[in-house]
Image (cartoon, rainbow, N blue to C red; front, side, top):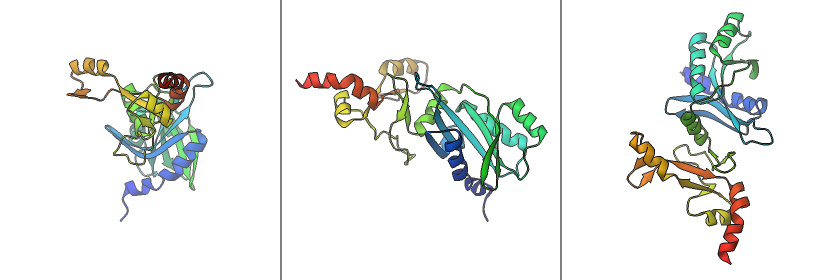
Amino acid sequence: MVSNLSKEAKLYPMVEKWMKKHFQCFQTAKNTGLIHGRIDVVGVRDVGGSFSGEVETISIEVKRGTEAFATSSGQALGYKIYANRVYLADVRNDSFTNDEIKIANHLGIGLIQIKNGKCNEIVTSPFYNPMTSHNMALLEKLALGKCQMCSSFFETGSNKDRNKLPWNNLTRDSVNKAVADEKGFVFWNWEVARRKNKMGVRHLNKDTTYERRFICPECISYFFEDTRDQHNE
């Protein structure tokens, strides 16, 4: 017997493929587990224009058309703690009713109709400002880090193994090694860690801190290559 979750999971690849094209996402993922939930399909797209590396995170809750609409809508809305835009994608032979569209507008979620293996955006999600800590945790799950110099997001590595930090596009040894290896750089901010530790937030544990920061390969190349050459002279 196939569970309801398994039936929904079969829809994820199709929704992910549509999302990537429709929203022009450069990074997508399925079934992404986080502390307070598991997002069925999530994507990230560039929205900053020519002068900013700002991105927008989109979450989609996928349903198979048999659950109570208000319940499904509430679940989709809950992911605004992680994402800038939140959607409910539901299997429907007929479109959403006027009452369901009113509910979606009242709650503030977008609606996507799934019909005959295709997706169609019916209602556009409003924009939300998610909780920074949760949004950044989601982005790291997608193997994306924010550069401390240019503020752009870049791929820190492969996120195929969800049990490991995706840092194979980074080095932690030194900036010079990052230049030589043509990689980004990860370092730790001890002052912020000590400050948060006084607040009772677990960001410092003996000789270990969780306050990680990144510099992208582009900035390493532009700003530190000359420094390495001068050091080697």
